[in-house]
Length: 125
Image 1 (cartoon, rainbow, N blue to C red):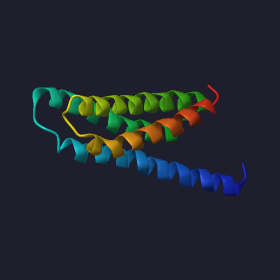
Image 2: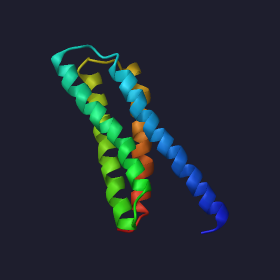
Image 3: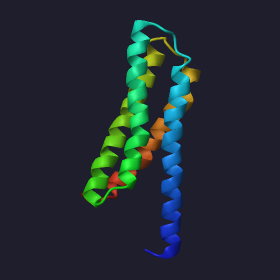
Image 4: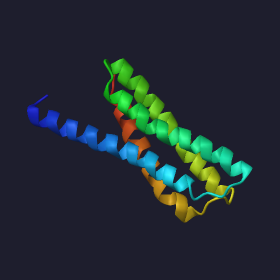
């Protein structure tokens, strides 16, 4: 790998690390706006766990010691991003949140999911 490619990869990794962290923060702020019902509290807790796990596990993937470990950690991130989408969809479809409120979060979680699924596909186990 050339020096320029290495630098470009390092920049991408850092920007993506910041992006997954921002998703977690955005979900935290969004969750503070949700109604305080028993059902929403359960969905909110699950949403917070999955969204914050995206950032935490991506950081762990960045520290992977092997391709197999990277593949494993990225697989967890993909699962958590998909779960984040599920809880956002459920909040909207249950009427607990509006489409406008979840739209940006869903778009970001979907993009993170897409990018990392592509990265996993290009990684040998």
